[in-house]
Length: 252
Length: 201
Image (cartoon, rainbow over all chains, first blue to last red; front, side, top):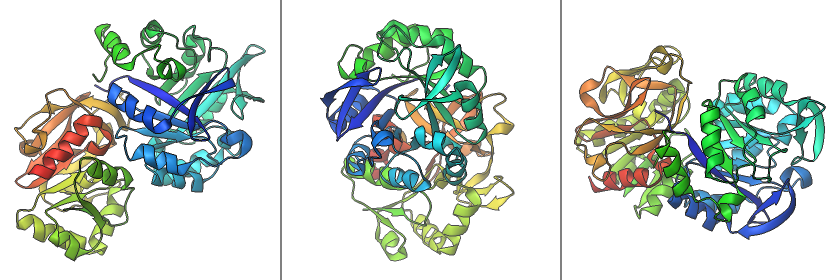
């Protein structure tokens, strides 16, 4: 059967991997190429490579860095950040990306999802959503988690899947950086309404949080994290061995 | 030298990079003479069968594939490239393939029940043959799949399967013709070892 996936996320700014707590106070961690190669050797099932400042500052993704990563890493690679047009899809796919993640670009122009799914197939289009509890609702935030769009996250995700998004990355701003565990409640609400793979993001602090995630929500396909991997707080090899020992299907 | 057939379908960046990574000399080419001078041939492909099969035929490169295979040159079809080796595909109508592997390409949705389509992700190989391609592969090693159609009625040519509700054809072979439904160029160390083994055939 298909394995559950463990996905390190490389947030990139100026060619370096960064990770902030609740998206603030970014700190330089390491080189994307070195980290990506390290993770691939360590057993990462996929890598997500985001230019986190691209939506806010209109910065183009550094395609040369991406090409360098993709020429050394032979596992699935998802790229996001500043994806606003079909040309942006084309640009990163040519550099070796397998999937392209849209966030603010799709909020601004939802048709982007449909256009990309038609051209490259649903499996290529990932809808990434930053969501936060506001007035008893899961609210979609744009521009790297800075702007309240006023949209309901569950409705937005349903709409995105209807337009052809083949996978959802749900990042809970409420749990991101806090290391108290994934946002099971928010993830469950999403899993209940879509039948495409859901990737959980935001809140992992230790191995037990992944165990809790996959046990509580069998419909979640993958767990994504950044700083705990970058700082070595959780070792991917050890994480996958532990999960496998607990009966969760893993690629070891 | 390996010729990666370029017939205007799909993105060859990862395939080219993975071959370079294992030290194999590879060229992406749509030139029959270059393909004929290569030691081995890779037929890649993503997208829809009908479009890809038509492009291959219109480019005339199907002829060089036939003639080189007849000489015994190793050929590896990957993903849609594997599917094109079959007699026919039932993806949006019935379309003729190269006919190098007896069998047909059918929709996964016919057989996998409630499971998600496409079959996408890492799945374990169950080896059915002592294949040269799997010289460095162990039973249960994981490889990366992305597909909605599968190889059917090809039992005697199946070299490995993967479990997805049913046993799905993961790879086929017949003499010097090989095909993988999964992407070796996206399957980590296991995938690289399969490409390495192909280079040693």
